[in-house]
Image (tube, rainbow, N blue to C red):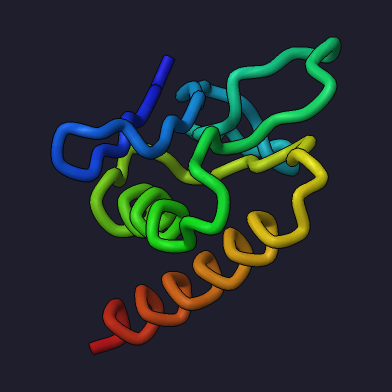
Amino acid sequence: MFILLIKNGDKLVGITPLMACKSSFRGLPVKSIQFMSNDNSPACGFIIKKDCEQIIEAIIYFLIKDFKNWDVIFLENLLNDTDINNCIFKTIEQARTCRTSTDQE
């Protein structure tokens, strides 16, 4: 299990129910981070206060920039919440671009 608790001071504002796994991606062995789920899970996602873009950004930036014990992040079976999902994908793209330009320096 790999659960992130996001706090604003003493107040809990977000939870990420993740797990670290050894799996394969396109036939190659990888260390992955993914939601805690199984074939019977109806949907997955971050547990956060609505309209809190900063919480999603903090989670994504932590996973991409600070926690480096993974090769692939699988965010499968996301809840059908367009605002949160758009924020997740936008933040991943920004962080990926930032990481790529930093790595090339």
